[in-house]
Length: 232
Image 1 (cartoon, one colour):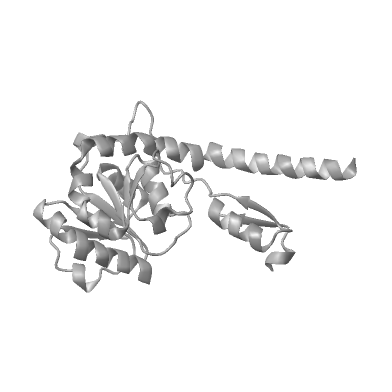
Image 2: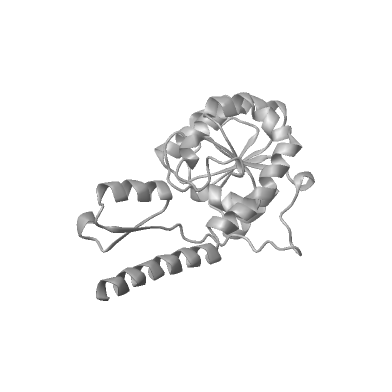
């Protein structure tokens, strides 16, 4: 079907590049649809350092997500336990056996959008040290839209815009490095504040309704220009 398509819409620039290479005659558009999770404004700002504590992990029930949660319990659990840091887990994910006795873990299960926003906006970090490439991670976009920085891995962010830049609002390391340095990242207010300030700006630049609309309009303008040039 792909070679006969008029348009291939991808969710990241990385995927767009791969499709362009494989199907050079088919038009492609990189477009991640708007995630309008926040109404943050100067009158209702995203909570700051003093108002936040704990970490959050949101996930559906699949093998990759269960593996990630298992990794958190096995490699991060000692820090969470010793520092009395709450790990809030939300979504349909099945809690693996290695995590079930953990006193630091609270599994909320399926929650409403209001409940999700309440937990994510009061967590200090989203923790997501995944092992497989996920394109554009919706859980990361949700967190950033609410001003919550992210501790994550390259596999989670390789296809996200600007993920190679210092301004990217996440600490991106391999899972072992994240675990070894978790205490530093969790307690370093300067690192957190820098990522926090960048989070909503990054979200607005790439995933807001205005950004998505601009991408669509630019693509349509390019198509019209090509059409006109063919008739000239």
